[in-house]
Length: 97
Length: 235
Length: 127
Picture 1 (cartoon, chains in turn purple, green, cyan):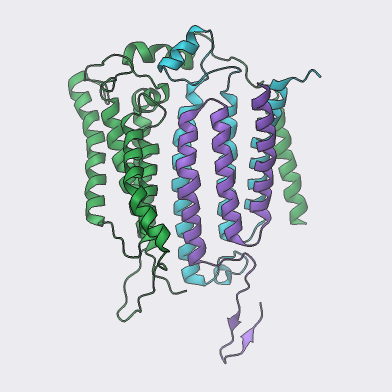
Picture 2 (tube, one colour; picture 1 turned 45 degrees about the vertical axis):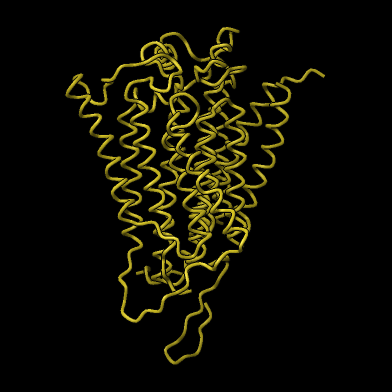
């Protein structure tokens, strides 16, 4: 009982820190890795609360598959969040947004 | 201005959630005799001889919802394929899909890939005895295929085989339900003999349905990953 | 020191579930890049799943599986935790992944058309 409580408090702090990092970070690749860490810690939570089926499912789907789908999206769109699109005027000079 | 409004909204949502959770004390035994949970916990080892209660709920007592979930996954992979469809124009240069990975990754993934397949198959075959089941086993097998696709640049999984496996598994699931309808007058009703508790062949049609679901989910997720990895946009 | 470990555990689990929901909601409402919004959706999903499993937990319970170990635990008098929220969350995790995959394919398609994925720079939709 005591052991579980201490583990849950420590993991909850890491979980919320990873969630804040995932939302605040401007480089999207780091944010996606933080989302994978959230799934990992969540899987340990599910195990402590006596739900092994749900822990297996979250580990199998949330850690590997969701992360790879996000990384493929980042590869085909932009990597940083604050990219500014620079448009070109009809005569070739650039217009700042 | 917008940020202040959003923070106020979040405070309202947080306060109402905390208020609602005050009435739900953590860890209290809320299973009264006569509720649905008590019924499931009592009837599963006696009426169905299945050890894993979650499997019995997902496949037998709420089996129709699992049919719906499997069709939602099918629709998702269909929608993904059709949204990302791109007609091949003539003379478009072939962009290199992935850089070749190092020697360590190539040798190691060839070694570990059969072990991952066997682990996934073990998980969905023993879904009614240990924690696991069709969805977990299918996801594990799809991760194995993903490893091979990322290690070798030109590893191709035949889309034809994936399509046939997925369709046959889906037809098997619905077909077992229809056989149950014909034999026992109820869709997805059990019609095979239930064995003893903790045997491999216990639970009637439950292991057969989960094997079909495992194949279907594995084929679907592999197809989704294959579609996503072969997007040929210019970078 | 006499600490109530159940109270500590309840603050840890309920607090992190509500915290995840609020952080995800903030990302969906404030952020401008579409991939970040989908990350926020995924975080809200995680918070809701944790909340469900936390409601179904019984103190000193055991997993709802009638294996030889589970039968021995039943003879010792341990209750089994509630199986219905677990079956619900199992389905919800798989469907959450399907929704995330389709949403990200829409983001890729939008980037292909507009060459940007920020919602405040897609100007051709304004009329």
